[in-house]
Image (cartoon, rainbow, N blue to C red):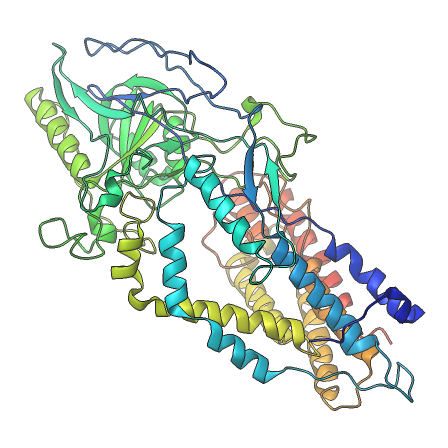
Length: 607
């Protein structure tokens, strides 16, 4: 694992230089923020959605919404409220101790394997230190204990722990105490505070969906809480179903079924139905949570109700008497998926930067990727009742009916995801009995990390990357070449860059193969490791996707096009064929070609 040193004075000038070169990578803060915690409230009439404003912990008298309605007339304009946590800070323990350990490992690797001279020889002529210590990996594997994993998960999941809640703070302190334990913990562990823009429901004003007759009679109301099968659902800190970051308000209108709420779904529906001032009920899947409201608003939809279709995740299983949880892993009828209705990552007010006291905050009105209309998730039992009541009312009024769901989408990882049934009992009985899958994942991750840390040459097959890039190019050629030729846009420069990268990858692979003998010098190893390590950075371009927050990787970024090729080029081509300028296609060809040329240069032999 590398030789120990007591003082920098023991190092030669060359060794101190290597340590200096590694230093920038060892002092970066690890910034991870637990933000999968949500916020909302609904009431529905005719149909109506009521979403209460979030609670402001600084205010004893939070803002009030317009009073409930008494007829089918549209309620007062929705009051839109968000909570910005300016004064109160929330503490989240960071895994900085893990980074410290990893950083120390890297220093040990650089100095121990490559830089510490042996007696009787120069640094340049030395063979590297021992490569992979297989016995260490075996000992590590043996110590990944499934019973310990089970005990840890039981302890970590005892209480609900939405961000900033008491359960969350208790969990932070629990982890901090463990990591600071002098006998079993890390070298260092500490808390770091971030001031983050979050969204919370008002526990005293639960969100609901209702159907209200013209005489004020409530014909339907959605559940406020999920049905309890174990003590877990009875915990008072279980977060009520809500759609985090969707705006507060009360909206009222006719109900329409809009499948998954994709743009295609709304386009199809809009051909036969006037969607203005309607409330869409949609299924999870098909598109992101926030997009269901963003898409609908473009067609005049004023509110969105979201449910999980049992045809998608339950294999059609519906009954909690013998088919769903607690009898199996399938989602019970009242289960509601919470979630964050936003399209971007991280703190929404400080994109690209940590949410510290000194950080500039953009105006809340400038936040992109949020639904502009209220939304509320419900269970499929409530969804069925809601649709039936609405169809009955519409049929009695000789209006159009609501079509029933037909299509399917890809299921979630597990049916109870982000519901009140996402508990230790559920995980231990149905997701991973015996926790052997957890154990396997832990062993695999540790094995990879140890080999990355201790291999004399990083265990990357660089030719896999060049083959993948060649496949991306071939897909672009097959799908775009005819149209591009008609517009006098050439793929030849891109083809040349792909070829150069492939040749550079083959050359580096050959040099690495030749270095497997004991005669490879530390500096030769350092050169190829730097080339392998820095390749990935060659594909980062902060200007490649100005309209996509946080996306910089030219090869791997989100895209709308179904063509499996370079994402920027694929989307630019899709927009161009839809009427946009072809200049963006040329721009992304330039970006990709330039990027691949730079990547090839980073792999080519320097000496």
